[in-house]
Image 1: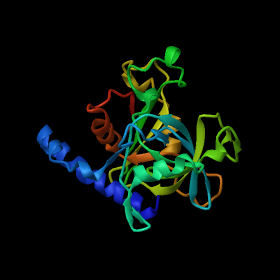
Image 2 (image 1 turned 120 degrees about the horizontal axis):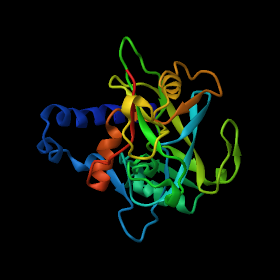
Image 3 (image 1 turned 45 degrees about the vertical axis):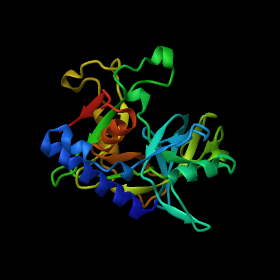
Image 4 (image 1 turned 30 degrees about the vertical axis):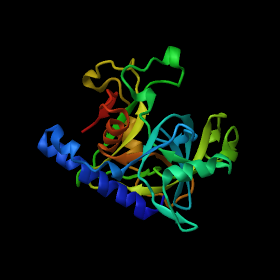
Length: 258
């Protein structure tokens, strides 16, 4: 995804979120133009494979973040990323289908199961529970960089291999290339550790890791190769996309620090 596309995502999602925040009603939400996002696949005959990077850790080379994402098979959502090929209008769903037989896939979005309050790590076995961490951005507490992966390209040759700075990948993990972006004005959100049972009440913040928050919310430069980043999204965007995709706002584990 280009820097322009990442900036457009932040601006677009802020424009979508503000009416909901200030109106306090579902009416503004129903007026949102659904064509601003695209759900894939559009046909049951098409492959539903994509890369989910919402919980990914990343490693930078020359200002580009390389992120360890999960290969998934379900419905997903993304900005449409319109383009032309041989005179035909195409979008992100076409790009996903093009990758099926050509060694690549695309990073799109679905709600990460490990972050949901009713996730059962014992039976679902997707790893430990996680939470959404909010990185505030203000003059007193400026937020830093995160990787913006919507539309990032991911190469199947990395599955099951070892990647510098990332280590060994499982067969269902893949490296995606994503631009490293400074925080938008509204701040951003990343995935991080949740030390309690999923859905447990986070009284006094005991379920959250403040050192993780302080480190990954305040990456001030990505000029050095080997900088660790998390994949991030402008604050509130994940909730908007989950609501559009799943038809409801998910109950997620949440971590916020002042």
